[in-house]
Image (tube, rainbow, N blue to C red; front, side):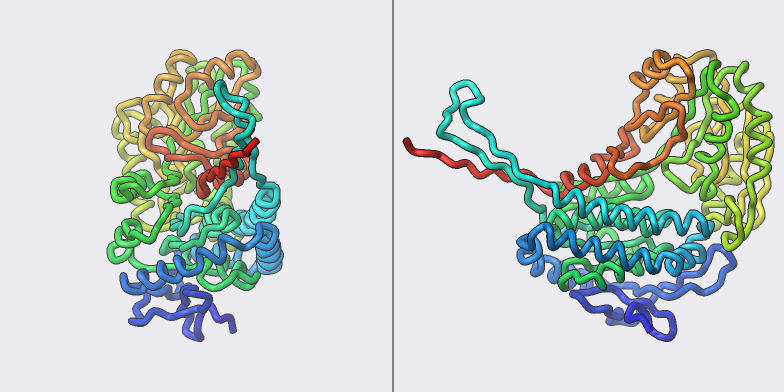
Length: 484
């Protein structure tokens, strides 16, 4: 049996190199959103246990920061190989713990394997820079500055429920290759999946205390660990509400925040509509829309909408709905609260004049894919992030009207522009207040070496393998003064 849990499926945390049960034997039960079945128990750690974890992290930092990068990279390569072997096993846990369809679950694990390997590759290519003093006016050729990147210390990584493997690894691996020690606080629903990722990293040979985990109730340890003086950097993915709360608490601790989005797809008259419809349906409804980068609204003119709606309706109604263990796309949402929000947003829109082209059916926590037409700026669905399979169509006068509505959002993660006119594409892209504009493609996160960032309430800082390493390290200059 794995050291990760006991025969009662009581999972443990990785503390100073050992899988450790909570001292108080307090647990949080994880039930499946698929059928309510028991998945396992995760420890509900106390503040004193958090103190110990942080202390172990500080003690391990100096030795880990001095480990050569090629040795750190070798551990990530080995972890990737272990994770690859365990991909199907971990995917099955993802299916039951967060109701992710099997195809997407396997894809998440395999993408994480690639991420670990690429991070190791990038780490091995990190080099210092030598600057000659005579290049600046008044400088001297007798001055040389050697600039290298050094770790920040202890990184607190907080990952979300929807990608507990990939978005944990995207925080942990760049921090480790940069020489930091890491404390991972996974989401409660998703913690078991994340712990299996950590097991692969630990089995690959990480020294004790370099990577540790903390599970528990946010009300007991959430604010406590974020404000702890032993934390040197916070890397968080989650809701905008919590992200703003963390930024207030963090004081001078640097942050990397990946928050919510209200990603718009702007469709012009010359777009290839069959291609656009397929692309948007995939972007809006995969994993039931529970993604910050999901397409969350369509902005287009009456002329385009009349042609596009039948294409969307046909494709949406073919999306399989049901148990994620079957070959489906639309699965139960993560919890009842998420389903209740979806119902509120649909009901609000319809009560104010929107028309449900298809969908508007909820069974338990399963929300059938819903297409709403006639959505106006007075409706909540025009602005709120649904995190569910709801796609509103907002009809606009022209491309400038579309830009206005897109930019009126508090969010600024991504947008898409569908057109065959590159001049119009760049005209719109230049004016959108978002981190990334996709031209003729759905909004999406990858590839993972591209920069990924949000503006306004969608985040702070830049991710992507090299960008994440840079975020969790700092430049240090050593100036050599030569004597003639």
